[in-house]
Image (tube, rainbow, N blue to C red; front, side, top):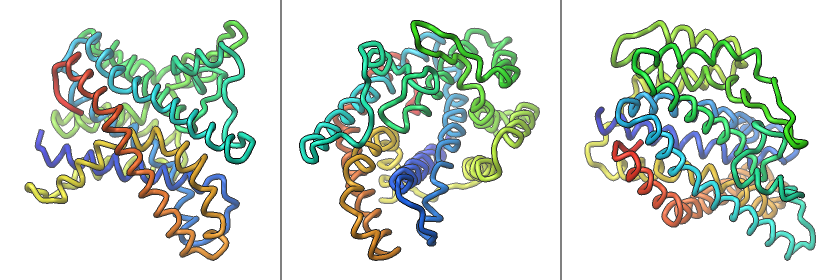
Length: 332
């Protein structure tokens, strides 16, 4: 796989994560139609783009590790930053409480059981426990993708059968169990699975000219998602398949790589930093008009990106090293 191809995945990751940041920053604000607020309200489309990228990346590394080592490596990569992001939330909430006298940002776990499930990454939509960070729901879905994909890696001959099996479970997505007072939905992820599998299928189209899986998952994605999500998904597919970055060791190459490296950290910490704390300081800017609103959001994004970079260096980068030690394979 060519290096510039990996860089285009980095660029797409970073753009999607920034767009999600902008969306979440403006979600709590009363919508006043303008070119900026209209642009912001579609930032949720970054999430299905992440799922497409994830599926494509899984195809890149599917034959490079055993199922157990694959799953262990993925969890080593994502779980320590998740735990650290919980600490970021608690620090931000504590700061708000100390300054304002009240926590009006997010409801923290109210019981030992809820706190334990939050620590174990067992929050909504997998359980009835609400996540204390708005983005955790998509991370939970991603973990289920990894778990199922590790099962798919158990046999080469059965792999495609196992890969398409969850497509038959989509109508059972709301099936739930009641355990110790908590509602658990073990199939919460399957409604998003066609998008993940579409990214995987794109790799097979580009490298093996295998179209049938792509056609099936594309049809399901169109059927299950509203028009804007479908548009974002297929724009991501076109970007991955056809867009090439003429980097050739340029400074832009390092910028793209830098952005891709912090995208997960940015995704994890932007809500407590930007949405719980920093948007409190832009109310006057919003009142002044759309241009000042845009500038205030830009400043908050820049600060949040810098904080995400620090989080990456302190937390996520070491987890990458642990992940590579466990897998001994390619960085994706």
